[in-house]
Structures are given as structure tokens and as C-alpha cells.
Length: 155
Image (cartoon, rainbow, N blue to C red):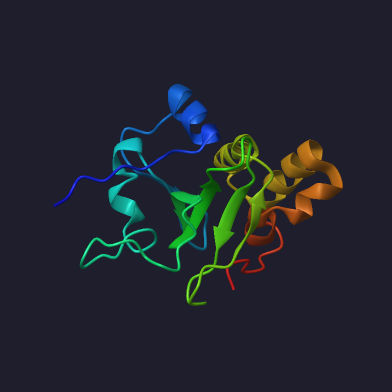
């Protein structure tokens, strides 16, 4: 196996300096699992996105600016190397080339939403918490669509 180097986006470097799971961290969202990746797993888990799983070569269609740091039910959540504070991007599976859309305005907001879900664990309290924090903008968050509206934002 050849050695690989993975540049990290600034928000991810800052986050890992303060909070980083020792192992991949699954978060039950009720309908599916969100998995936050441990730092030591990041390179290996880029396989299938950045690198081909069989030959290890770079995937031509992959945008090299994107670094996947988590999966939402198997869909990649990524940050871009050229953006200092986000946003967090989500792509849907099964569309050939990855079509990323904004999932959260920043990595801090992303983690705050996940923490709020873990704290409340149910749609009503989660909705109230997101509305208190984001006001009318709460409905634009991917996690709102998934857990409050029950719209499959991945499709």
C-alpha cells in the first residue's frame, strides 16, 4: 500500500484540536445513522470518493478541494480546502458525479445541530432548539429537513 497525504480544511483542524472522537462515532438520527469519522480514519475513508477502492488511484471526477469527514446514511459530508469557515457540504449518492449542497453554514453549526439532537432526541424539542438558535434560517439546515420536516433531504 502506498503512503497517502490528505490536506485538511482549516475548520476541521481547529475542531480536531479540541474535540475528536477516538473511534468513528455513530449518531442515531432515527431514520438512519450519521457517522462522524475519527481523525486516524480520514485517509482510509476517502476511498470511494477521492481514491479508487481497487487500485488506489485518484478518482478523476472527485473535486480535490473536498475532504469528507463524516457520512449521513452513507452520503458524504465534506468541507472544502479553500473555505476558511465552511459551509459543510452534503452530497447525495447515486447521482454519478457528486452534487454537493450546503448542509450547515459552518462546521461549528453542524456540530451544534448534532449536539442539540443528542440532547433532545425527539423532533419537538429539536425543532424548538433549532428555531431558538437559527430563527427562520432553521428550515434551510439539512438536519431540519431530515428530523423535523421528515423530508428525505438525501433524495
